[in-house]
Image (tube, rainbow, N blue to C red):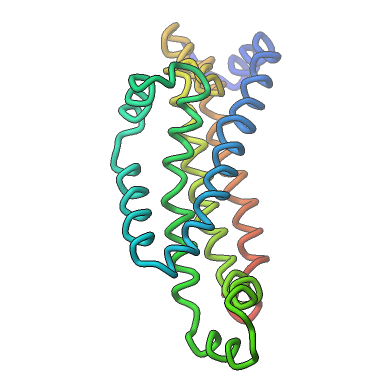
Length: 218
């Protein structure tokens, strides 16, 4: 089937309601939701990892292990152990893949803070809690945001595979198009997924820049 902008537009008009429903599902359910979960888990875990070596070794080892498992294999494992098909195993898989960038950047950002600043905070009478929230987190926030940015872009692409297990999203258009040998339908799913990744990367990149202290901006 020949592909032109006109043919893709015609395909969009034929599937416009489905397209927007799947786009919204892809963004909210398969990207935002697992990224929020990963952020809520990984940032506190990264903070604890800077305090206790046992947590550092075990958490980073687990997150690295999740990254080494092929995405389709991980989805198959989650289905086999009882999570069934649909959104649930897809969200869990994306959550697990998102942990490493956020966890690693949180740990690295806090660990790389100049020790002199921490000693100055202690000399001013700050408690460990005050030092964390007033010195460590503000100074490492841009690095943490870089981890969230990386995880988000990875998730947009990974979420397209959710369609193979009935997880919905833009991948459903891609899979259906491949099955029907309909290149227009395939591109109707693939192009917006790529655009979503680029747009989110741009937005989070700007946010990362804004969160970087002025003296550290390049």
